[in-house]
Length: 150
Length: 118
Image (tube, rainbow over all chains, first blue to last red; front, side, top):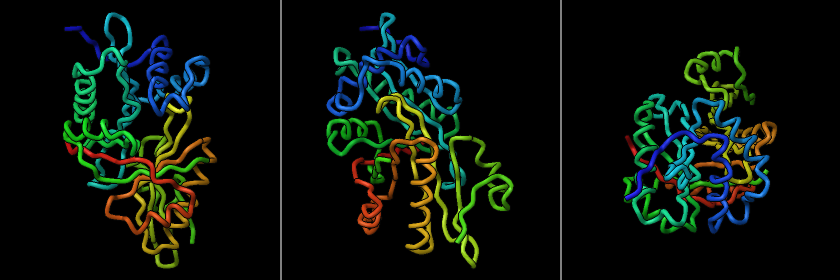
């Protein structure tokens, strides 16, 4: 059994995070760890914003999992805050151990701690395994996500 | 019809207390009879998609289809103005009737949305 630490990402974690994003059937086409410039720029903006949390799971000083949690205010549901989870990845050699579920439960607990009334996420329609994973964690299919390239 | 969301405008000023985060913009659409619709745009920076800036348009409520159109047009223009390379839009599962409408604006249906109550 490995020991894991869940903490906010640091600048030196970005290379490992981008490799996890790219090592994925959808991310492979859109993420490239060879040039970290745009990712470091994005990290600076995320890190400066108290409502955006980029998280890593660390094992033996190496990031082996990541997700991004954004706290969004809104008027609906009596002005409830919502936690939005995205970019969830576990490094291939750490999958199947329950680490992904632990990381998601961390995000759920953190959202609750920050006063959110719900946690929301969208997952590509092609990710059937991920959909079962989220449903096991208590998520219910509730909306359809559309995208527009600008 | 007029769209507004800037601080200092009458309704926006009241909403300002609720909307303390700079990356979230709540707007209303107004016609001769008052408020006819609303939408919320959140601008995100993420590491995925090459560190791209993206927008999330949600909470669209409108009295008429024409108002929905105006809110979508605003959301697309504002997201572009703020440097977003993609705009995401969330819609309730029951709103099958809106899918073709969103498609006319170029939106592709690509995600399953999940929610967990706390």
